[in-house]
Length: 359
Image 1 (cartoon, rainbow, N blue to C red):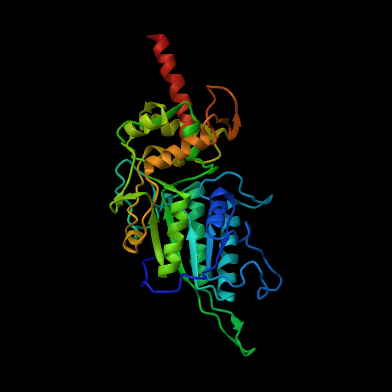
Image 2: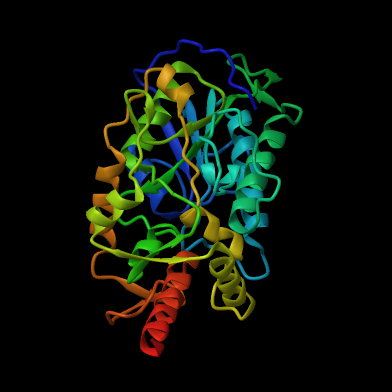
């Protein structure tokens, strides 16, 4: 999707509805007015939906690597997200919503050792797997549902006229942090060591949920459409924390492994069921995926939080917590095995100690 024209619109009185599960959606809901369900309802009468009546902007959040998604028995995560996208899109059309804002993740663009900065119009990676592929399916389902023939809606005189499709903007943020945010990326910082791989200098760009909410407001106020990356900026350029700065700020040491060793270990852990996600998820904690946020910056959006401040918020959230197999436990040497990077870091640390003992 390319960005559409900027249309002026009233900001006073704009009403937001936020649909989505997880902590990120909850924080956005609170920041944007505190309205909206976790799950988009499937009403028997689609023209009577109090949860969306009167809304000008519908924000649909797809949990990006968050824990606790309410998937019913026998349903896949992807099917759940696709259904949520379809329900939200159809409700937006039927109820005259002017703007739909989808929140996914810049992880859909992929990460690699030589990954250039991600621009708004860069395509999603064709190699997306796991929950990242689910995010791509969510975006596609939203676009397709909004492109369906518009149903008729009642007008002021009691007649019925075709509903106009709303504008769609897809926000793809960098790593999101905020009070209580718990993802496979934040759990990377619950391990006793931070994992790095040889030959990849991974800068860290973070985005505070306050700034994500302000980005949604800019999209609604300016009537933006298309795909827009979102991340910390300084003077209009990506603001990142270097690996050395990250260690200084977190107080965590690193364990460095060859890429083949790290990804091989993650694959073995996934194969035996220790890690719920594929080894490809490891790329997002060891390789760069920095975003430019050019479109939002040009539209006047300015983040209030730096990446360094985001690291401080993250460490405050994870302080004193460790996890094993996705469940937090006590003990200094436990690792956050709910996340690939943390699990491999633990294995790497053990390997280092074995080598030291042999020497």
